[in-house]
Length: 268
Ligand code: ADP
Ligand code: MG
Image (cartoon, rainbow, N blue to C red):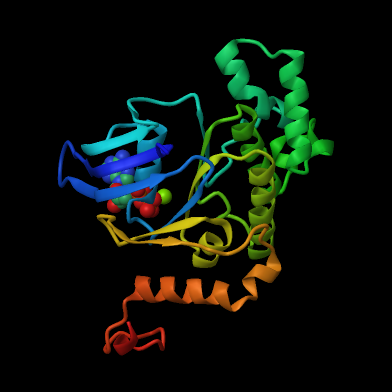
C-alpha cells in the first residue's frame, strides 16, 4: 500500500540574510501509512516544528522531498489540519465562530449544515455548552479543545499537531491525550504528533520517531505494540515502561562520565 505521507532524504537549512545559516533537519526518511498515529519526539530546538511546517506546506524543504500519496507537497494543503502549541483563537469571536472561521474564510459564508457540524464537533471535544462563550472565559485546556475542534471540522485526512498539550498542566494534559485517542478512534486520520514528552509519545502513538539534537536526524523509529484502546492502565504495564525506558536511554545515550540515568553506559 502506498504510504500516506513520505519524507524522502529531507533536509532543511534556514538561509539567513545576515549571519549564519541554520541547518534544522538532515537526512530525514520516514513514511506514515493512512490512519497511522506517529509521534515525533525530540529536544527543544532540534527541528520538530520545521518538520511539521514542511508537511503542512508552509515552506519547501531545501533538500529532498515531502509527499502526500506520491504528490510532492508544494504549498498549504486543504486536506491537512494543524493544531499549534497555542490555540491562537480570535479573541473577539466566540467559541463556535472560532471553530467556523476556516470554513467562513474558505467558502465566504457559513451554511446551517456547517453550523450543525461545528456544534457536533464541540460536543465531541466536550464543549457543547460553551459555544457562545468568549475565548477569555475558557481555561487553557478548553481553549486548546476549541483549536482541535477547529482543525477537525474541516475533516482533514492528515492532522498535524505541534506540542498541542505542552502549555497544559500535567493532569489536563493526560486527559486531553485520552480524549484525542477517542476522537481519533471515532474519526480515523493520519496523525503527525510532535511532543517532547516520552510517555505522551508512547501512550498515543503507533510509531515514535526519536530525533537527535539539531540538526535533527532520526535516531530511531520505534513501533509501539501496545493494545488499543489505551488507558491509564496502559501506563502501569511493564511493556509501557519498557518502551519509555528504552527511548530515554536512546535520548540520553549515557557515557560513563555523564550517566545521569543510572542505566549505565555499558548497558546501552
Ligand atoms: P523545535 O520545534 O524542535 O523546537 P524548530 O524546528 O522550531 O525546533 O527550530 C529548529 C532550529 O531552526 C532552531 O535552531 C531555530 O532557531 C531555527 N529556526 C526555526 N525557524 C527559523 C526561521 N524562520 N529562520 C531561521 N531559523 C529558524
Ligand atoms: Mg517547535
